Amino acid sequence: MGVSSKLFKEYADKCIAKEKISPELYEQYGVKKGLRDKNGKGVLSGITDISKIVSSKEEDGISVPCDGMLYYRGYDIFDLVNGVKARNGFGFEETAYLLLFGNLPNEAELKDFNELMSLSRTLPKNFVRDVIMKAPSKDIMNCMTKSILTLGSYDKKMSDVSISNVIRQSIMLISVFPMFAVYSYHAYNHAENDESFYIHRPSPELGVAENILRMLRPDKSFTELEARVLDIALMLHMEHGGGNNSTFTTRVVSSAGSDTYSVIAAALSSLKGPKHGGANIMVMKMIDDLKENVSDYNDEEQLYQYLEKLVDKNAFDKKGLIYGMGHAVYSVSDPRARVFKQFVEQLAIAKGREDDYKLYTNIERLAPIVISKKRKIYKGVSANVDFYSGFVYSMLGIPVELYTPLFAMARIVGWSAHRIEELINVDKIIRPAYQSIVEEQDYVPLADR
Image (cartoon, rainbow, N blue to C red; front, top):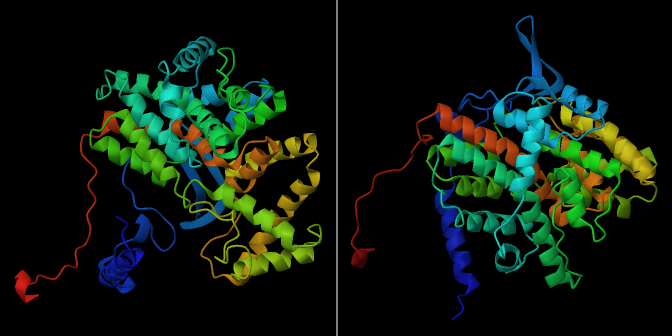
């Protein structure tokens, strides 16, 4: 029997009327919405030795915004990327080792870790048929969550939270995440779009970035530049300071003593939220709208006018946002965007997309001017890593449905490192306090209500 949607609307109106809390109360009780103060500074909720974000420096006792910096275990992300670039290698596995174990691997350690990743890149017999191919969906993140939780039932030591076992589980999940994502996409693409269905096994000789492209493409082929740019993208998305929503989720669920599969499923559910992991998709949609409404997007005056309309809520989704601009922490610049930009240009030239690259760079330059003019902001605005990542993925022929899953394929490394750090150092469940404004009432019998 169907239920009237009118009833749910009435319930919703009742909830909104009852649950609406006056904004003044947050100020009165000193409660910080989103655990951030009015300047965007986060409430301290833990200590980490995994990564560090720098967005300002002290000068004569005053905090002054600076170019953003990102450190993994104390190493500048620029140095890590340049080190990979100098040897014409791939950095995902080396960076994963660094984040998980705290030091850069030597050649022997990296070789052993690569072999372990390769051996871990397998799924139980018939898992693709019985789990991934069942109930395919356009929401690949949900499909991945289903796969993670189901995989846990195959693990006889699922609930063992000893560090050695958690490391085993973490490396295994890092290794199979690309398989979850790409195979789930192929299942959906076949079921919903009537496209050919194929499952390419990952190659033991290839790393994560190469295998993603190999498994995704019908002919398994890719260029070295394509694989290297994707590898850099994964490095840049791997970890970010510990204060982001999905990493905090990892810490919270780990503190409850839950198993690795449940923890990573919870983190994945956080990341899929459009306020967290879906920003690059919105950038792409915004660019598509721009191209439909600007006759000459090489004309900077027309571009400027369109960006003004965005901020004035008169264009695209009318939310007043220029997607890909601004960050909760960075103001002068996002170091990940600065690193990425040089590789974006190389790929754009190789793909014959120089005009699109010029469009992105013009928006990057003009948007902060428009936002500063239209909005009263407490800090500067600059392009974040999501501004360019969607453009890169489109040049790599990666379908939009896999944009956020790609983020997850990288960020699971950071989640795993934070889970291990939480289990080793903290023995208390995370239990934040909420200020109650409940007023006591006398009970009224049902017949008298």
